[in-house]
Length: 308
Image (cartoon, rainbow, N blue to C red; front, side, top):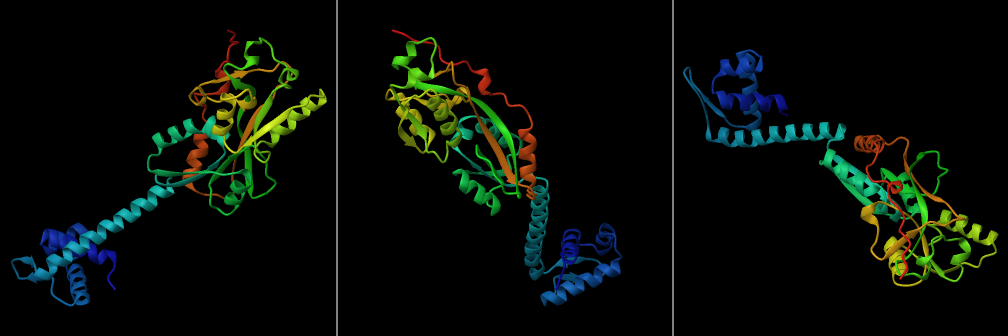
């Protein structure tokens, strides 16, 4: 079986067509080079060079073999480059799981920054519920997940990575839009659109508990699976909802954001990943997340009061 050094010696001699010069380039003796070429010809089963005292010339078979040998060496170099770049996180794959809130707030800017710095890394985005993200992380099908819930699995590491104030949202022409100050009691006549309890568990618990403490009857008229559905229902009706303010790019036309005088809360999104994940691209992603972002919810003012 021939090794890569045999192919390298053959290709170099085919280019130089001079034994001593080729041997000098390869840092071996001319006798050693002659033995290598003889071994290559023996394995191929035919002469690859015509050698005389004055010249070295490739045979027809030698020219054909040269084409394949050069391709083999290029493939070997490419394989080494890919392996090196993956080990450095320059290329490879980063698999992320997320919920709607992450994509509505900080995740788009992070993705844009990461793409600019590591264009060779393929980012695989997966919109998944919390339970499926956790399962995928444990199965090594995701590198990092973003969700608001917690995890008790010791194989996973969890850190709060984003906080946003939770505000009341309504249609811009909603009857409550004329009020300069809003309280929980003002919301009782109107229905609410909230996400499915499994996804919005923190919102449900805190908000509804505060309402119950004031003996308010808050009606959840719709439960929606995604942000677009919540926003669409709110914009087209008198229903209300609660949502993090998000970034300016993510705010929706036709939606007003208002504070409540007697209720405050925030959404907390966690980043979750396996403690033993050694993907270099993940290390770059985590380092990127340590830097401050340019777009934050606390830089955005709530909607002004609008009355006809």
